[in-house]
Length: 249
Image: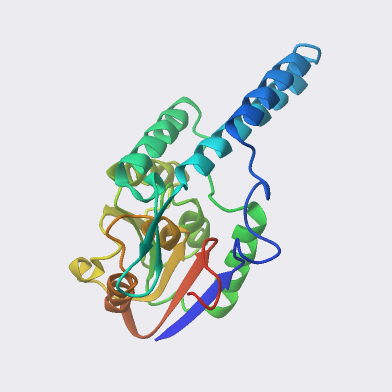
């Protein structure tokens, strides 16, 4: 088993976060109010961009507010931080919105939870250093944009799983639109990968471990055992995290 960490943590000096100092609710509302005033004095294109920015700031504030509960330390010694971001209900809501957006505008394939720079660097690393010929499994694929980009112009076995059935529906729609029939999607639990009855040369986690560890029943040991069960002998596991330091992972 080879494990590769593609990592820059919130605890490092250069975190992955969109805003290094999150705005409070009152500041966000004030910012949005000022932005709407500015938008009224701009042309149509600039106005829309400004309003989009305000909406993004408010969405960021909602995510920040969700990260508010310290549940102590788990039996495996890992600090437990519980949040609605670790619940299926939250992600069902997120992907229901993105599925509606995609139905309205097929060019809107959903949100990439890391910056474009991270996705580009991860793609470069995976394509240059990881085995793709023995099957690729993407844990918590969401809209599966990264997996679909990886599978483009490649033959092989590609599977994206998510515990949100809505996310799986979105991923399947995006894959169908792109015409990538070699990519499959299924509803599955990342901590029960032995149930897949498939093994892969490469397992990818791009932010799923972060969300999982915010759940009330999260277990590092259970997660690690599940990933091991999904890997072929000599397989590679690549994890991209924004909530843990390299030592913690």
